[in-house]
Length: 257
Image (cartoon, rainbow, N blue to C red; front, top):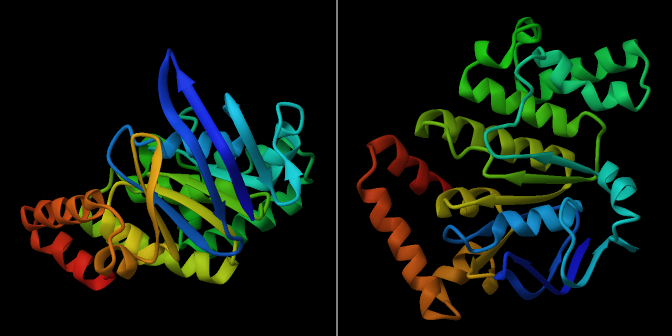
């Protein structure tokens, strides 16, 4: 379980997170969604300890997250950042086992873990020696996911992991992610701007706006029982956007509802 109590964060005098309190349950997927600037990615950075809150407290399980405890607690989290964040001068294998190598894992253990993750993510083993520039967008995201899972952390943080992919590849990876989440039963916190993705992957959806939580619950709750006019406005705007997309994207949305 992850808990934020009255957490605030500002940059340059601008309030990004404003007295946010929320509890993220363990062993399920929670999705943060909302317009640009809502504070979704900042919440992930605060949970990971990359950023420290200006006020409030964050608990990772029973442990308070502080500047002193952050390096140790970060070992319990895998982080998939926007666009994957792979090192271009390292091969796929080197990107994946980088942290395990730093942690002192022996070579055979690292190789066995990479093989296990290739099977889990359906990544072709013959592409492990390729560099990121030689991979497709979907393959790069699979490598980034494998890197985040390499040390088998109980918490997985994902910031717009599929945002740059075309609709067909994105739908395929959504299916794979859902299966992976179900199999691993980790605590997953995922940021997206796509309501269909949130509905498909999330056990709980948290809708944010301007650094505040507007509503959280199941997708059906947000649709049938909006707690604020913005909830309906946001969902209807997403639906209008989908009507301008190609048929594959629309089918993806309908499949995920």
